[in-house]
Image 1 (cartoon, one colour):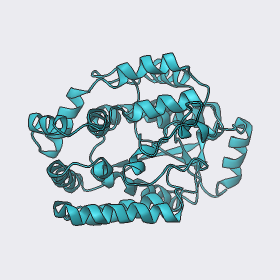
Image 2: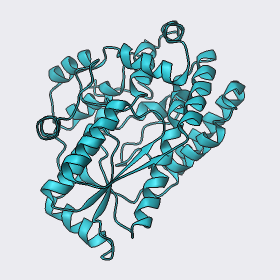
Image 3: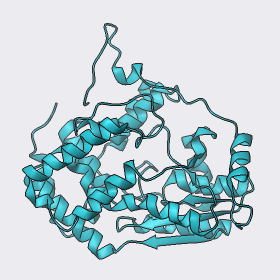
Image 4: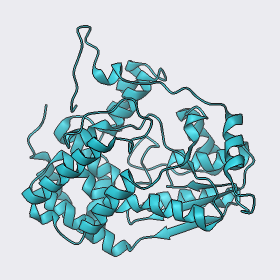
Amino acid sequence: MPFINFNEQGVCNYCRGYKRNRYRSEEQLKKIILESRNKLSKFDCVIPLSGGRDSSFALHYAKKILGLNPIAYSFDWGMLTDLGRRNQARMCGKLGVEHIIISADIKKNRENIRKNVTAWLRSPSLGTVPLFMAGDKRYFYHANQLSKNIGGAPILYAENPYEKTDFKSGFCGVPPVFDIEHVYNLGMLNKIKLGTYYLKEYIKNPAFINSSVYETIDAYISSYFTPHDYIYLYLYKRWDEEEITLTLTNEYSWELAADTQTSWRIGDGTAAFYNFIYYSVAGFTEADTFRSNQIRGGVIDRETALALVQIENIPRYESIKWYCDIIGIDFQNTLNCILNIPKLY
């Protein structure tokens, strides 16, 4: 784990620096949404709907629990799975919610991903793995534009408080920042460090200098400089995995993936691939940091978390093959290359 250190009691800095969420009330949530909305808009809020479990539950919660009139928004950048699309349709159809879908140039985006993955395989580095996902960061820009276009409705965002993955910027030489609520609030110095790291990687590996460069620069700006003035659902409503999964499957026939037992990240076509890289090379994935933060938050115990990651870290080969096929790279050669990268453990 990048930048990890332990005190004399054997407690790491990630645990020492963890800040538990002080939940606001659900009454406050409804009040702030209604006070933030433009009275001339027919919509109370915009809900970015990825097709994943947290945003799907947010749509349910806004419509059925808070009694609001939301509009759903999705950005299809080329890596939304068919399962994710079906779950979006299930939610919006059952709730009777209008759904705005904004699509990138899918063919171009997939070609850019292929170029970056191919470049990465020539000179693998864990710090440059996020380049594969550069195309999805336009998501923030379009969310802000849609909010303006429908009269300034506030954006109710379903960011999971336990999904903080400091290791991704850590592999770029940026230390974890514990006193921030959101991953894009790194501070100006760390944003410069991050940009400098990628500039050096581009110089070291010129194959990254391809048609995706504009998209990568745009992703950096969208992630760290575009305003994220959103209302965060799970700062008001306690995130409960069992409640979310049961609500979605029982009330909406929400579909689960065939190649994993978890309901997390199943609508995202990239997650199985990049987590396979992290697991193979570093020995852990997003699942480990997610469950670790739940332990720190007092949600689950260590034994439960260890049992869960044993299941969640099983490689999702079916999804990885889909990813390789969809961007046009050879599945077996790619796996062999990843497995031959020297381990960090």
